[in-house]
Every structure is written in C-alpha cells, then in structure tokens.
Image (tube, one colour):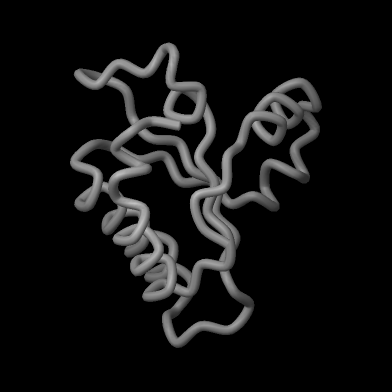
Length: 105
C-alpha cells in the first residue's frame, strides 16, 4: 500500500466516520505500490456507504471524494464497490477486487 495512505490512516478513518462510509479500499497502483508515481498517479478507492446517513447521497459521495483529495493532496477516483461487483467485465472486476486492500471497515 502507498505510504501516504498508511501515514494518514487515522485521518482517513475520521473522514469515513464523518461521511458514513462502511468500507473503504484502495486498488490500482496505490495498492500495488510498485508502479505508483508520486508526481502523477492518483488514488483509486472502492467505497461502500452505510445505508443510513444524515447526508444526501450526492453530498455523501462527492463530499467524501473531495475530502479525500484534500487530505491526500492528489486526485482521487472513487468507485462504489457494488458497481464493480455488478460489472459485466469479469476480467476488470476480478482484477480490482482481487488486489483491493482495506483502508477502513
């Protein structure tokens, strides 16, 4: 896992609680660590939100994405886990889910 995520794990957990995140996982180059380029790589996250939240769903998703970008200082791609699980592209689905690492939850 990319060191920036490990260093900020407590702050990430606080954001997850604030935005009603049930589970957060990192995937892609930030999870592999080998091909992550600090000068241009983004962070790819899978997210699963709690069913009940005080925030409207749009604010929950986009607010959380913006908060992650602000905390980590780089672009973030946020994808709902259930969208990947339902993907008809089984090759991509398997690759993402196999290498995803839990950050929170």
